[in-house]
Length: 483
Length: 41
Image 1 (cartoon, each protein chain N blue to C red):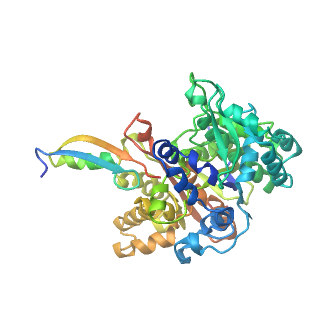
Image 2 (cartoon, one colour; image 1 turned 180 degrees about the vertical axis):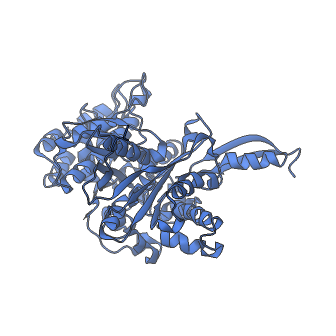
């Protein structure tokens, strides 16, 4: 019997939605724990929060928006938070929104009256969002007109736990109420995380579909790839935020599912999306990932210690579109998917052999045949002050070392290899968002323009954090020019 | 080299993982009393 002819999947587009969220830094996991036990922490954090313009202009954010190429950061003097020229809030790969709009979006995305905005602020948010190209009249109706300040006070002191919501200035603009009196899986801070993940992913998906001129109703399936735990006490982490995002983005003909894999969820999801398209099960699949609110201010102590602004103040959502071959869009290759198997071992060498060397060998390619490797792309300006080092550089050195072990380059050439085939880190520490995916929109541009021929995306997931195994995980895939 | 020694193996996902440190320590004769890997991003 002749083998079934599969459709070649392609990645048609990618968009990011960034939201500057300085007022929510206090709700990040690390800041909230410290604020609860140490006087003065809240004030120290507030004093180090960046204004909106600084987050908008920040060169690594401008890279995510597509206004500048990642390689341009190599030559931009550090610290980038002092060297960034003015930038626009919108770029070819997405937009960054100020916190006033984010709070409005949280209210718009809330179907359970969890978020309550004070009336004056609701009016401000309405004004800010009224002209947004991705906001519809029905969204503004959902935003509503808010509540009097006394009503917010009442909820904050009521029988159902609630958390106040503030702007960077410290001004309280509303609150979020728990979904249940005692269920910790529906606590106010958990629902805030989940709602933020929903709206950032939905805005990214809206931007992607609008930007590509695609009818939202034509999307067949949405795969969520984030790390939030959506559920209640009987099904903690039950999931399918994907379908909630599909609804919010107007994808009436879609259903969806969440694929969980810590930070490598999006690459797993892309492999599944490509497989669904290749097999003909679905024609148009969106992969989405919402933000990781818990990671706001995760390394604030290091930032304060070095006298720099708290740079972990930005939420990021992403949306990617996988379809059948259109003859133009870069191809998502399914034949050499790199897998970090159970038996592979936990050393960096073993992980990168599984994710990089083995797929390249299967194709008969040398390490230098891949123009750019996208790995953990955390911004070093966020990680170095707390002693976590330059994470992308660590990873690129391992890949370069494997190339040296394969005698493709000399050991002395490893740093040059890391620069030529690697990328500077530019992603906020947003968990799954930072793992390889931040480069995807630039890769699509470069693969279309001829700048690149082959790119490889690899991501690692810290499974051990969940206490079910000591293992990590990893997966990789090649995205190449459509020739 | 580490015979009779007790070792705490603290690793990092993007550096050297706890399991790899523990394996090396055991191979050198140590008793690994705690093995942890952390993720700092």
